[in-house]
Length: 77
Image (cartoon, rainbow, N blue to C red; front, top):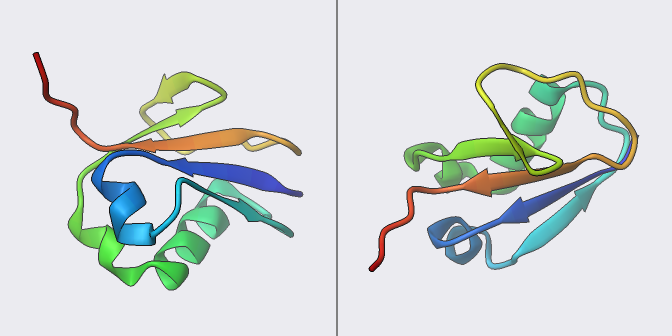
């Protein structure tokens, strides 16, 4: 299946992009490993994960066309 991953804040800087498409994804674990293979330095950052705009706390079951957002901590005023 194809999944779109969005990178925000410092993660966009680390990856050099605001998004990336991944094809032939079999599971959330597979996706996470592929992201870490492409951007090994990402493992040093804390971030939350949203699937289709919903924050998650566990490994979701992905579906074709899902959009995953990697959200680092935000600060501002």
